[in-house]
Amino acid sequence: MYISKWIKGALVLASLVLLCAWAFQVDHAWARAGGGRSSMGSRGSRSAAPSRSYTPPSTSRPSQPSPGYTPTRPTTPPGSQPSSFWRSFGGGMLGGLAGGFLFRSLFGGPAAQGGWGGSSGGGIGLFDILVLCGIGYLIYWYIKKKRQEAAATQGYYQSSSQPVQMPYQPTFPPAYDTLPPADQGERDLEQGLAYIRQMDASFDEARFQDQCMDTFFKVQGAYADRDMSTVRNLLTGEMYQLLQADADKLKAEHQINRLENIAVRSVDLTEAWQEAGQDYITVRVYANLLDYNVDEASGQVLSGSKTDPVKFEEYWTFSRPVGNNPWQLSAIQQAA
Picture: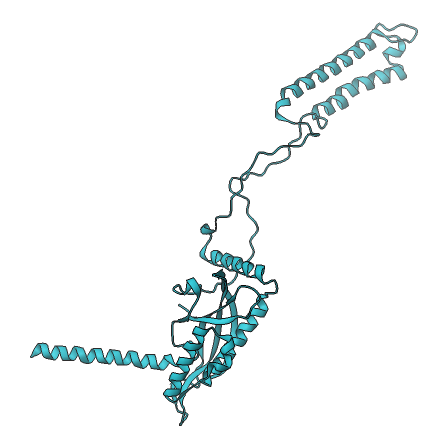
């Protein structure tokens, strides 16, 4: 007896849960076109995967040097510029000796007066000869020293008249799999758009976004009229059948979907790729509107609200044969 009552109570509770779930489904299933399902249509090989969430484009970053790169400064081989030693030597010691010798000769120094072993006739004296010999020896010693330094470093430097052969540096493709998810998605989008442009040089992102917005308004208007035939050329065969079936369901239940005060805030590209001879582009439609269903006869609101706008985010996928061909809506997915 007790068990029987417990079973009956459980069945009643389960029925209430199912009834609430069905009521929730009815309240949302016949809203705007595609709004009552988490996913509808085909995205090719990506149909089973959720659409890539929209992330704002990353700001441009300065290029980073390759791993292991060490900046180097140009090296000047010895001897290409006058050394500080030669400048100090020539301008200091040699200059002083030569200057002193010239001063004595011109202004009556010991050399001019015959002092320190010089002759009385004003010729060159012994001191002057010693000075000249010392200067000559210092010059010889300096030149010999520089030649020895040049010979010691000859193996480390090449002549400036010969081309410098840099060691071979292998190049590797960038490691895309190491990028952050946001950068990876942005790179995939750019690569997909590049493939599309290769087959259709006239493709323009801004114009495509405008076409997507126009398609959004036209599809919603046809759905409110419960007749998708007016936008048949904008839909793939699968999407036409799915949306028309939803519109027929509304008509059978004598309901009309009303959309008012539609404000599309942005249409952003999130994915682009090619497969099996088809182009695919997914865009995020971010908008808010008044979305409600009314009774066909009385105009009474059956679901939704005439006063509280709904903000939503949906991902619409468009496809076409590769090349300059018209785009068609092939899938609608709700944001995760």
